[in-house]
Image 1: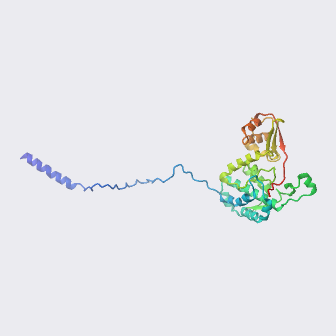
Image 2: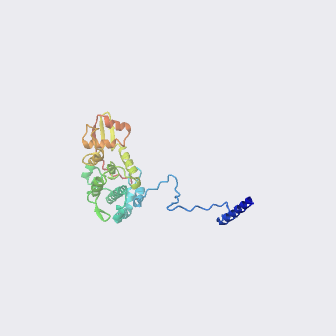
Image 3: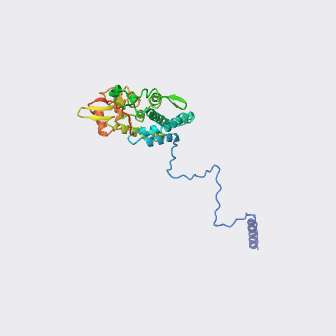
Length: 309
């Protein structure tokens, strides 16, 4: 009887326990998404190794048409045709004048350099076109040759133009930006003197996003010309463009390329220039410059116009 009473009480407790439990939904094949934790951020769908492209300044594109259509791959210019299209040059120069200075200030340094290089080169084209074909006196033709740009009086100092509503000459741009603010001697191989001994004019604008590559290419192109650099081992002589003279741009190489450890037979400015050149010529040429016994002689400028008409 006692045993039966225990079974009855146990059964009664099970009934009360089941009644007190919450109902459980039957399982299904569909799984509900988990609630996100606070501050739980969904991962972005990012392509592996994706690199954001550099922001490019579109202003430089304005120079592309003239440089592409009137300058060939060797830096020669079709001045005859360009003279008939000189209104294009004038309209382009107005764009340099109309640029908002606040926009210019927001650009990276490389784009500022590209801007002034393009402004300088376009204005040089404009000056040549204004004086084309070059007319020279009989006396000066004997001294400079009949087609020398030196017959254009004040080519660097007298021809004014406006950039961002400020007056400039080619000489003013050179002194203020190329020699002082930017401090990169490669710039001097990117500006044109509109002559045969000048660094070649590119048939594309300079751009900030690829300026370093363009400047290096300009230096190599210039030094590959016998008008700019050559070695005569028999005479133990190195010939350099007059651009490298101390009275021209030679001093501008001192800050970055001045050196005392090598080229000890030469003056400080020449040492800096030679140190710069070794970065851009062949290994054999660089070796000769570093350990050879030689004198340096500067090549006379050929100011004959770079006319490819």
